[in-house]
Image (cartoon, rainbow, N blue to C red; front, side):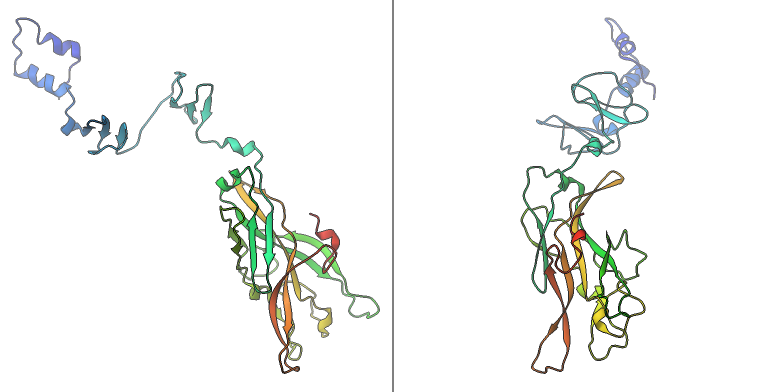
Length: 298
């Protein structure tokens, strides 16, 4: 293919000239042929497609676009600086790859808890700033890690729960025990819409070893070891809180904790008073009742 510039082609067709076959070939090869070159124009919209027979926009390309640097300060201009893609908004060049909100505070609402004996529900209140929803928020379940002082040998001293910390079982409590269960849940995008959380209650507990009479259940990975024979000195409840967590770039951002709720086993009384049956039950926990008051404020 021998292509020529417009000025050269014009010189073939000046007054009195008789272009030959070669010059006509050069003329044809220098022009764009819509079919040969895969360029299509959709009328009357005047949409142009490159490799696309039915373009859907002003320019519709079946493939990638390579751009270079630019100094043109016109709104809508994009460029590749050699290090980053940028766009000009009429005032300044803005990075198209870096998240400007990474250094901006994002409001994260406090989760609201409602529970029945059998089910746990969660929701978040409506708020003006809902940009946290843009970061795929999730509910993280935090367990209250504690230990019981080994005072069961001295019956004159009461057994106490010593505060330790709130820990996310998946990310911050992985060495406690190997017992996979649900600890993270997607956040519903609609405010005040209660959603059921299945945290698999049975997986948080185990029966007291060799206890064939009382059949108490104690938390897995908590309490004392070895387990004392008297079940009175074994915890039967786990304490939890929930918070909304988002991820901005490579960093996690944590919202406030919810209220405290417990999960434990309550006895079900039947006609046979000698039969001891227990079931997992959710309950809200008020400050100072059922756990150390200090742990409620985080």
